[in-house]
Image (cartoon, rainbow, N blue to C red; front, side):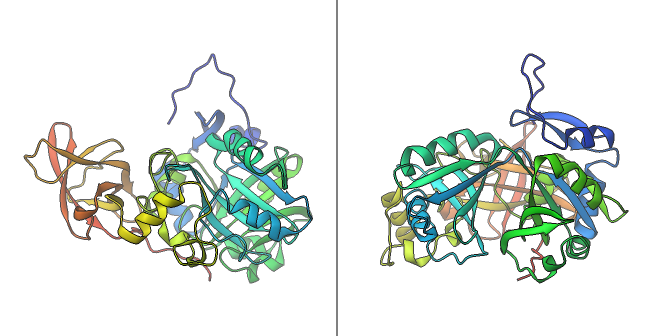
Length: 382
């Protein structure tokens, strides 16, 4: 977490008063005053989301509308393909896709969600990158597209096995949505954008709502014992168990999608031999890695003891070696997994499942096993 700097004016989301009223412990995060936890604590919030449902305020994220000047969503899709290695043209109306903005070296400028709303694309980008992402879009696509930031919209995420039953009370058609379906829907009579997606590995929804109606909708969803408000602490432990990257930690401008084990997100049409191969920033580097492999890779790591191994811990091939071979990028205790869990980067030659490596922890070498991700199987409704 960022350290509070009282000299810096923190922004507030439209749900700030709700967090304070419900006892949220507020901390600075990406320039916003955000709840890290509530009185119930991170552990209980995590487990409640896995067994019931949790409501997350993610209004600090950036929401952007991308519309082609021609009026054709296909033209907006082709324009966006200049900046991401994903197939956006084939994304049908009412569907969403995970993507990455890449740089000329193949590194990741940010990861994002892209939805086809029929006549335009709807993008959700990370809070810390949203100003730069908007500038990136304007610098490269303004000749063919209209880029509109949507700062007057809040974003909330309802996650967990009870999410469908709860949201269906306010939006009956939500029950019929499949994982990664997305589009405009009325929720409790409010015009919203709803996607069946999230950042926990659980079934759930993300709901974009006008900021002046966000508190009323959040309060309605929280009216009952099955939905708890959940802070940043449990959001982080849930996404780590789900094997999901945190931008700026597990992926960054010096990490390619292939190194980040994100090649599953790149469709055949954009790869070598595909109908629209390349054409995006860093394509030469990324396509070469897809064909021949990268020198390092993000992997799951399971410490063999009970002590969590945290971000930044150095990794070694042998208990006595002085040659660092990688580092942990995310780590902590997995409440649902029941063990410490971590992710990090290793040379590809040591990235096979069950490989034994060692982390530096308080002057001692702790053994870890490379393991498959995610640590907790996803429960998406496909």
